[in-house]
Amino acid sequence: MKLLEYEAKDVFRGFGIPVPRGKVAESAEGAVRAAEMIGGQVVVKAQVPVGGRGKAGGILVAETPERAGEAAARLLASEVRGIKVRRVLVEERLKIEKEFYLGLTVDRRHRTYVILASSEGGVDIEEVASRTPEKIIRQAVDPLEGFRPHHARWVAKRLGFSGGLMMKLSEIATKLYNLGVEADAELAEINPLALVGEGFVAADARLNIDDNALFRHGDLLQRYGEGELEGLSEVEREARRLGLTYVELDGNIGIIGNGAGLTMATLDTVTLYGGKPGNFLDLGGGTPPERVEQAVSLLLNNKKMGVLLVNILGGITRCDEIARGIVNARLKAEVVKPIVVRLSGTNEEEGIRILREAGIEVMGTMEEAAERSVTLAGGR
Image 1 (spheres, rainbow, N blue to C red):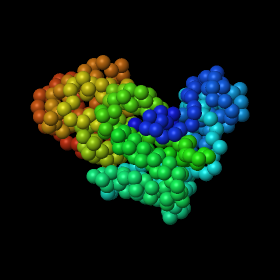
Image 2 (image 1 turned 120 degrees about the vertical axis):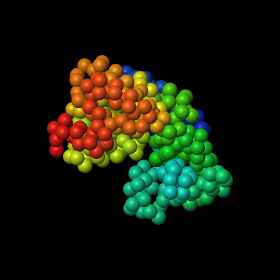
Image 3 (image 1 turned 180 degrees about the vertical axis):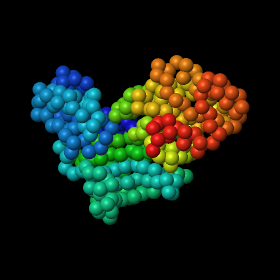
Image 4 (image 1 turned 90 degrees about the horizontal axis):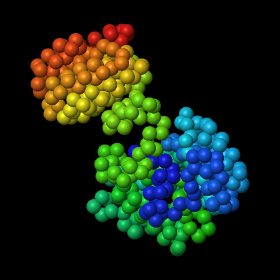
């Protein structure tokens, strides 16, 4: 789950990381009130889940509350990198002396967290790593030892600080690490980390939480889940609301499988026979008929899908329950589309009987089902 900037800053603030004074607005009038509350110059920032907002015109400076309202109106009527702006963050404009980068991410190769820092803040860290890799500071964190105070001070020293500023920066690094671990973050990033007077402020913040750990963060999902839907298509939004693992693709053959590996193999096989998969939808294991019905209905109601291919290997998943879900969805569908099914495993015979009695094609192998689907979708 990718949090928007204002959402991430809420979390950062809760962990004691300094952030600018600010308020979210969904209208020009709201932006004026926020700017009046803050006082002085403000920045008005589009809240969309993409990077490079400044370069794309998504961040504007306003000298007065009235100007803040005009800036908000302009942003709220626009798109940033193809995403409609639905709200803006009005923040105090900082008097920044220098910008740095500070982040926590997962080093999957070494199976641990790593702290990243750089004196080149305010730009993409990937760009810094490519252009001047010597300016990237890396501190791997032993999960058993944790991020110790001397690690944090080492990072601050490498950025060129000593004395009080070194201690303040090391405290922020420690808080960022604690935040990342407690939130199961894939990425917790401050860019830029602004040196302002005698301290540091997180001028921008990014927080990506591992979707597989969201069951441990129901409070965050409830508070910020809506923002995760920004930028998704209507079908993707519906799939997310239903809790389905779904990815939109550009083809016209709807794909449902159980298990990521089998679903990917189905996509590959359809492509091998000259078809174009329209999506990836993984039912997972032990799926009840109601859930199957939701998944099938989602694709049957998707106008771009010309045919639907369901490929199931039944283990925990019962083939007869899959079949009942498919039949129920087809009975309720407003538009009749061809469905091709391959079922194998637990209660396979019963599942095939249910489907064939309902007039749904059942093929013996994945290859046969993929080839038939491609033919029904219009061939190569």
